[in-house]
Length: 311
Length: 264
Image (cartoon, rainbow over all chains, first blue to last red; front, side, top):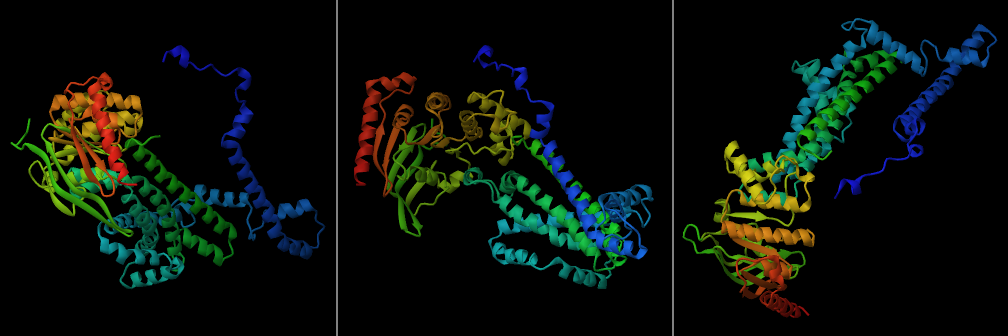
């Protein structure tokens, strides 16, 4: 084919998308609109939910008030039913940026406590999940004997299991990081097992026959075929696993009366009616979860690129 | 031509294979007798379900026969497989998508424990043989279907087996690419002196390539004719217009028709 035939005429100027339509057709526009709508809904909800208490206040003070007064006051209560976004942001700014990171009042300090058990639990859970999957795929008896237990383990509410784990491990002298990591492990091994069983079984019959024609050992078939085939499945599972590891770590902090961690912060907030504190801890947890998932996605992209996967 | 002093690359005696299925037994192969001499190019041709792929898989020790005897290079199919006596080319390229073309071709060498330098050298050599020089660093998805299948042929050849088993390797390709690859395959066979067993359901392909054409028929899968081709080893594409070629094709077609009428 000559270049003259293949050349594509540039679009006439009029047909080129303008800045505004690019904004709407791209992702920025819709994402921004949804975010703004949620913030607006939140503010409306704050006014609505906090107004009964505010009516009482106005009545007791016996003052004349306008709608403007009502809105202003409901959005700036000390212990609102639903804190307004700017209150949460202000609290987060104070406890993340202004307080020294090693202080008990710092969210960075509490986040680190939770994050360390999240990461430990995630690492152990992922490893356990992979080992279980390999066992299930390679040993026929294990599939029948192990899989029901794996599934049953996830039907029990974690809130019921967590206190027992803490008590049992506490009685043998394990406190602090380990019990929380065990709860994270308990939650995060499951998606990895399920994903990896599917991944390790994903090579098609021809690819497996090929290994047989070379008289490859089981070990070679595993490393050169089943393992690389399962990598995309592994990362999908790891993304779920790391998010629920964080949930596990937070849940693990609730029944123990833990002094530190985002869970402890949530619990303390609810004891003292500090709703702003609860919400800022919640948002910090959500932010950390998003960050962790994004990190796994980044590693996934790098690994798949190295494996030459079609972009 | 024959290595290890074995004259017969494949020797099949009264071979049967019955699959037990939920709907009762399926007679995939029944009383099959076949002899493939070293250096032959033998094609199995027949309609779907005639057992041509199954017979090939029995030779490769990917299926177990339920009756009869078979030897490959003078030993059992299992021993032949363990000795890596054959290279198998499947209907699909079955390249591993996470490996570059060079590393795909070198896969059997890696499994056999060859060193890095030798693997690279051999992979390059066989990629050159199938006209894929310069594509060694590409990944499978970057190649066309025909190029992928050529890479899979290089992979089957690179550990230098005496026997090449090809199961409809060009079935999914268009006519033009197919002609081209058929020509290349003949040259390759001529150059290397290997024994080739080839499964196809295209009459012109079978006649163009083979020294012997095995006509098969379904239900039960069996051999109804073995035709020895009178065509010379050297075959340009336009040999397909010659009277000898058409005569062989006619005989194959008659064989297929005879086998088919048994069905109705």
